[in-house]
Image 1: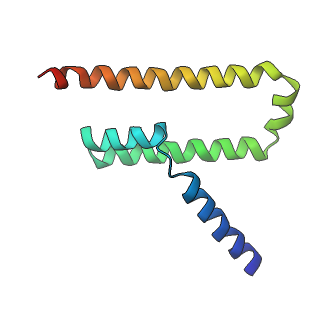
Image 2: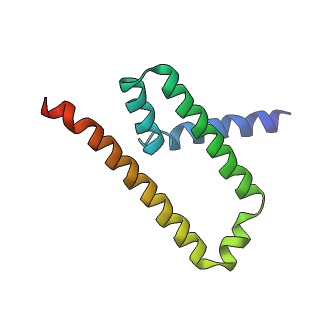
Length: 102
């Protein structure tokens, strides 16, 4: 039992340390909280947590062999991810532009 508790503490520490850099989800949370309110930011946070859980389930479910067999799939997923991040950045910048001009 102590081993599981120790592993959980290590996991918590690693998760907190690697979660410090401001990522896209963190930026979306801050932006949503400032613009719309806490409830909207909470929804984004819950959605992000569910996505992280889905990624973990896929990783533990054996996604690595699929990515190893199909090398182009990993590149395609990275390109889709980059497009989503770029699209989000464009939406945020366009939304802020009129307020900055006023």
